[in-house]
Image (tube, rainbow, N blue to C red):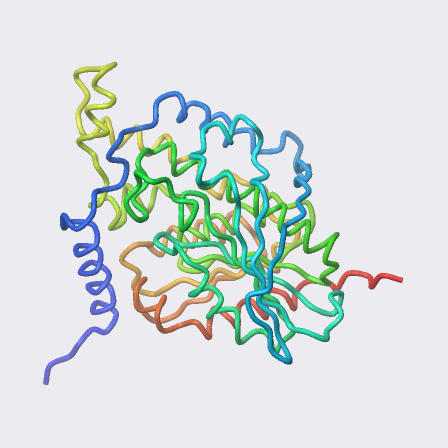
Length: 360
């Protein structure tokens, strides 16, 4: 009798998918244009500025007024799309490609329910998620729970992708930091709009993989309690690009050549160490504990070829009161098969928040 280790099958599936996506010549590798020069220095400084000097103090989100159009509506629900100018400051905008200056969101909400009796969750994009469809599919069934879904199109993704960029393969290391910092700013502004303009009673932020890292950062830095729901996410981009499968899809030689202009004796190990140092800025364990850590639920996979277990547990340890839930599978199979578990985490996270006082 042959015993099949299902967990190992999931893990191997991740590596097969990763080899197909990142080791073949179907698309260029990540960071084929190098580090990003002065843009990287700017982004490193701006990421460091995220951390409040005094625990519990966060800079206020920028105000937005999206321009909306209705995509469709039924008797019970309505899908709208909105646009607004990115809320990043002018220094960051100058580092962005022009295509990314206008932010786009989809907003799926129940009809005939007062906003203060509804919740809304902002869904952030994982690597390769260029459209609204997958996240609307995840959030759609939550309409019956009176939970609305807002989907942000990431900078450098979808219609915001620069012309020279192939798919999700960011051209420079600085682009990864830019994507993160801009996503944080825009998401905090959307949560502020949902709170003060739309009047929702509860709010949350979720994301899968890279989107989960950004969701954790937003939940940490937002000035009011929000449900924070990272799915299949590491504690830092170091894990993805220096330990996980994405290291096979990274242009290490191009990065070495870029550094060798200043230091000719650079080895590939020197380059990897430089990458670890840069991406340590994305380490969510360095961020403040969210205002309500009990409303933080991580959903992780038992046999994830991209995200090792220790990475998830580091975040839980850093945020006492948070919860980790495990689903059986790898990164790819869990992404495909466990949407119900992600939805359950969204509902439970929101249930751990207090309702806002209704308006008079």
